[in-house]
Amino acid sequence: MKREQIEQFIEEFVQEKIKNTELELVDVEYVRERDWFLRVYLDKEGGLEIEDCQYISELLTEYLDVKDPIKDKYYLEVSSPGLDRQLKKARDFVRHKGQKIDIMFFKPQAGIKKLVGILGDVNEEFLEVQTEDKTEKLSRSLIASVRLHIDF
Figure 1 (tube, helix red, strand yellow):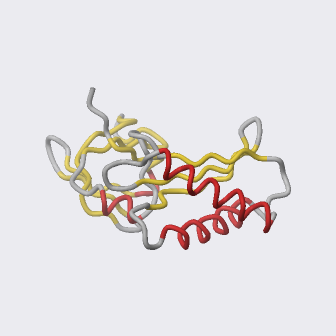
Figure 2 (cartoon, helix red, strand yellow; figure 1 turned 135 degrees about the horizontal axis):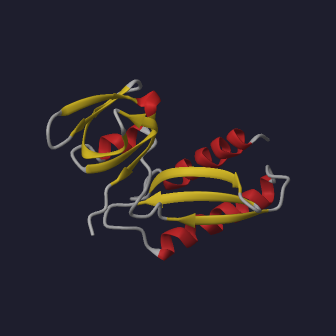
Figure 3 (cartoon, one colour; figure 1 turned 45 degrees about the vertical axis):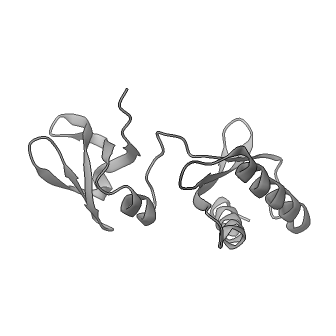
């Protein structure tokens, strides 16, 4: 299986297992760093607990041992996406509408590489963000990443 197929395969399994729980699947990634890692990111209202990660990890380990879709040696990690999580999917943008975000551009836009503002409406092509001065409609093709803003 290719990387994208593995991610989809795992996503479908996890979605089925958490269907009637408080858990939410945030992302699945199968990436090669020095070694291969299969990472499953979960969240839930009020915060994820270690038991939640352990539960999904055990289910996945058993399932993967039987189905054996991954031929490479890999490490399985099940965790929270963290405070500085990247917003990727439509449901991420819906859930965090009205919150402060950091936007990083592929190339500086009007001399700006990073923009901080309040997340507004989002569609396939554009992301709306309210800055101190105005509301801007940004082409998503120019945006490298969108993350929740963390104030220290």
